Image (cartoon, rainbow, N blue to C red; front, side, top):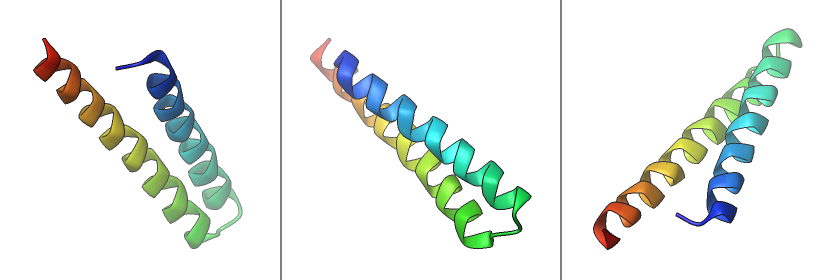
Length: 57
């Protein structure tokens, strides 16, 4: 996994966590859901990249 991809995925997860927190504090269910989605997507992308690295050996 390239360092750039790792960073992008980590940033997406952090942004998602922030969106979720703000959504909860402001009682905005859409923002909360968006934050959760961003976190899940970042984690999924990291898992895909890890799988690619494992295949490359």
